Image (cartoon, rainbow, N blue to C red; front, top):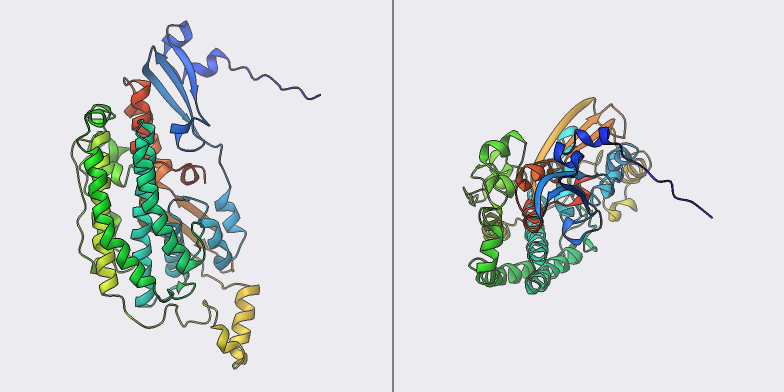
Amino acid sequence: MSSLEQIEITTEELRHLVSPRAIEGDTILLNMGPQHPSTHGVLRLLLELDGEIVVNCIPDIGYLHTGIEKSIESKSYEKSEVMTDRLDYLNTMGNNLAYCLAVEKLVDLDVPERAQAVRVIFAELQRIASHMVWLGTHMLDLGAMSVFFYTFTQRERILDLMEMAGGQRMMTTYFRPGGLWRDVPDGWVEGVRELIDDLPRHFKEFEALISKNPIFLDRTKDIGILSAEDGLAWGVTGSTLRGSGVDYDIRKAEPYSGYERYEFDVPLATEGDVYARYWVRMKELYESVRIVHQALDKLPSGPFRSNNRKFVPPPRAELGESMEAVIHHFKLWTEGFPAPKNSVYLPVESPRGELGVLLEGDGGPKPYRCYWRTPSFVNLQVLPMLSKGHYVADLVAIIGSIDIVLGDTDR
């Protein structure tokens, strides 16, 4: 019969985490998570409470740690990409994009215009799908169940389009260094256009349900205020920072994949509370639709992958006709391609903020070092600051407004 070892935490170990009142017994310590529904994954919070008031909130992460960075360092550049889907599982296309852009920058690999446009379309569709999950679960945390069903219905339509092109609904690995796995199939463009023509109608329905709802306003206005100065000091990015009035969007600041060719606005709010963060994300939905419209209108014909055979496998049709193609195919899938001794950092704008990849090559076929700057990990740091002095029920609203994904945090 197995026995569980009881772990005791000493008073000295707690002293630097909680207030002196907790040591004296004036406040109570309470675990929230790691399986609590509103902790959005496996997040454990150690709460110090005075009645229902949060005195201290201490995030305890690591329950989902997957070691993805070290796993990537053990594989070739091409074969590592499949690992990136498992980081932020609500932004798989965005993860693929960041990784591919970093590899392409490291080895100086070209990407055809058509592939760049398709990448932008999928990145924006992925942003909409992610915001649908955020909105549905955020409202579920606040006790509104209907919105959850409405938003997930729209998200399903986007996953259908991802499956149509990549064969998978979530773990896509559809982008590849040098372009795409394959071109988009017949009917895909028409399907995307039908979707984005219809989505704004649903966005307005969501806003009509939520934006002026008195219960929602009571639960979100003046709750969890993040100032612009604090947001910048803590490295917060994405909609969470833009809800505090900071105009920083990597698609504008450091355009990639042709974003400089599209017209779109960066929604901002100045209040910095839970409602401001909600408002910014709702407006971003319309901007994503606007970008997809432009990308579809400008979608060029032509190749969808680079013709540089030192980094991109040849089409299967060439294998029966060209010995050189057979050699390239064999070497790429058995050895991979070498990258020079150099390091690159490539940031993109994920639905949660700045998602950056650092790759360091050593002349071999595997990255010597791979590091991900994930927005959920950084943005989560402000949770203790935002939650102090609020009720436990407000803490649930604040967590949802930061829009964390634990796969993005515990990489």
